[in-house]
Image (cartoon, rainbow, N blue to C red; front, side, top):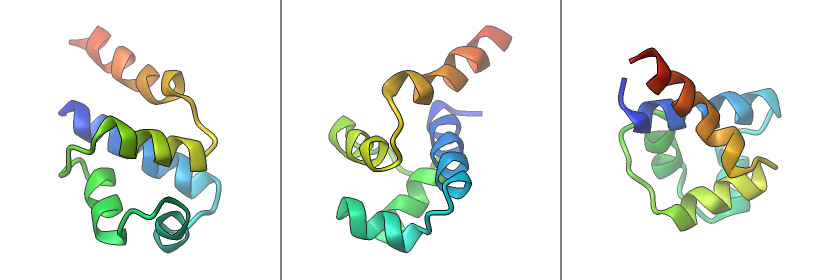
Length: 76
């Protein structure tokens, strides 16, 4: 699994846990639904600024986002 996929899965997991739709997140962030979907699927490589905007609106911090990556890399 690529890092983009790990990040995307974490964003999707948190978004769903908070019961926020892609449309709602798109409205909050100004990022298109299609691009948000691509991020969640690990098919996009968003800028740090875009990730920061998403994290802000999901009430996440960078540590929460990267913890799954650190755990994934430890398994390698």
